[in-house]
Amino acid sequence: MDVFKELPLKKQTYMEMLFQNCTEEVKYYMRVMEVGEDKTLIEAGEKCSNIYIILSGKVTGIEWPMHGKPYYFKDYGPGDFFGEIEYFAGLLNYRISVVTATKCSVLVVPTVYYMEWLRNDVEALYMRTKENMRRLISQTADARKSLFIDGRERLMMHLIRKYEQKQPVKKVLELKQSRDQLSEEIGFSVKTLNRNIKKLREIGLIDIQRGKIVVTEEGYLRMKEHIGNDIYGEI
Image 1 (tube, rainbow, N blue to C red):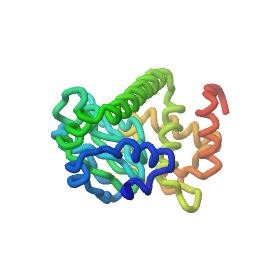
Image 2 (cartoon, one colour; image 1 turned 180 degrees about the horizontal axis):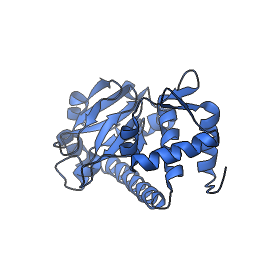
Image 3 (spheres, rainbow, N blue to C red; image 1 turned 30 degrees about the horizontal axis):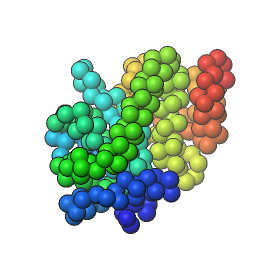
Image 4 (cartoon, rainbow, N blue to C red; image 1 turned 90 degrees about the vertical axis):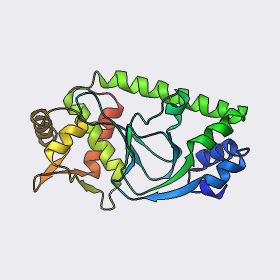
């Protein structure tokens, strides 16, 4: 299908295999939607009426815990599905919110036609079940790891994610968010955030300009190496 031509080759091949026997209803009702940066694609609590598949760009998953503060927990990109797991689990509403981190191209398929197709296509159902199990296992492992990450590592992971989302042309990223917004996104207090910003600045991983955090390509690469090697002492 031409609709999948924007995907990386491996994911394009997967999608073509998945949709090769999809029903005429799915083909007729599915549509491609272009969504701008920083737009809400899915809002938690809304009726799970569509399956969304990211064709290009990046989005961020946001959890809304009992205390009402958002937790920005993971980025997703081309080939990722939303709304499918909820329906498999018998849930009527979306469990997480999804916000675009960049401009995105999204394939939208009405849930009723999508699930009707999967119920009658054993091979497609197997492919999606296998992928969803892999995704859930990965998310569970990530959640366990996050319990042992201190404030500095959590901040670095957030800055790495922001740099990779924007992929700045000049290799320098200036974060637009206020300290209050950043503390909410990362999940700890402004006081803890400021303390860790000071630490990263002192060891040359970030800079502060006009009160905003600035990440250079060198700082990004050093932070990525640190997180990738699981080093928890001084850098």
